[in-house]
Length: 595
Image (tube, rainbow, N blue to C red):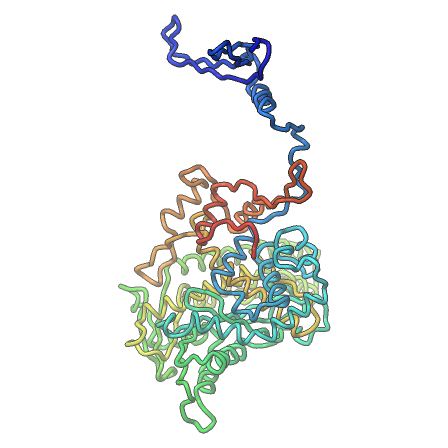
């Protein structure tokens, strides 16, 4: 064969171990364009060109072209027709399936898919129902659950369907987390909160005490029932004027009658659990013990009752706390009950500091007013009283001041005896319970009551931090109940996600168990190190829960069309190490689709 015929090909040659004059070891790579031909019975090679001076990418293109590959411009080889956020909804949906939430909601069907989409959306991107409906098109949640084309009527129908299944859903959660097998202490936590309403036509909207500080606004109240660790189990919505004892009575009846939970110990805040309510709850119509047994409780006394225990050499005296910070006492006013008195010196010092700061702030506001009166720029007892009234209660300290007003003078003095009387209660709280010591010792009673902090944490997550329940825009009573139920179920998901993702966030993974239940809670050294260094040993930043969800959203699913193909192929972006670990922590691989 002639030397100028035959196909050419690219050959790469690498030489290693070359040592230059300075004694440095170097490696050299060369690339050649060669032709192979046969000379009689011998195969020979001919170098057509030296390609070593060309960039590697150009050499790769020449090599690919000579091998018969079809080369197209980079911009035309692959087209990404659409890219949707996927990681955040995939993680939340995976946790929901791990917890068996879809089956708990009800039988498979369009209504359940819509309800699941509403719950997942409340975790990932809390917003109004109309905003959520538009958002479904902008994430893989809408397409994968088949809800992208849903209408507002479909959403409201799904909410009504969910509200009708509330008792069954909550009964399933109660069987998981409050039944004796899962909850040997037979204990449940309950607390009440409120949120304001937009509009005035909802039958539940009423005026009452606003825990959000929205004075003059109609509101609803809702009570949350949880297990001892604060895991949400049930929620009930009440008119905004409902008192704490009435709410407690209803949730206790739900636990007994609908959840079939016998001999529970209900933990509630002061003023919520009263003796009259418990007596009525534990007495059947004929005066006998009701079927299923009696309910115990743990709550706290109000300040007047504590003051009465301290008066006239009563059972609560400071000498009890010389060597300890809790003591069990008895009182004829609380027959058949145990009283556990606690004194927290850290809390006492903080309350004393705060009171003094507020008193000084009030005196600072009154000083210009006193100067005006002394200068004669403000006269008349009535006018002086009106101006003094505007400032005396700004910091709610008016009860600690004595105002003496005449037509030409204003004198302000502290009521020192009253201040000292209030200060005597600083750091004190007294718990009451009928549960015998053989079932629950005094430190355990204190720990159980302090666990109400978990319900308060759930309320923060539901109302503002994660789920944005407030304000409520719905007009129909059932829609309001359904909205609150969706937020509670989203909080149930969030509770488990926060625990699973603790290694990636600032959450304390292993909070130390205090030796003294009265002492303030402490963070573990590991959690303090997280807050100080902000990055894990691998250099990855710690995030809060919302920040981690936002990072997961950057894991997108892309619709890719290759050159010459008419269909698209779904492909995930390469996950970061944090995204991989987030899915590892909930025990599943990263899914391409939700279903």
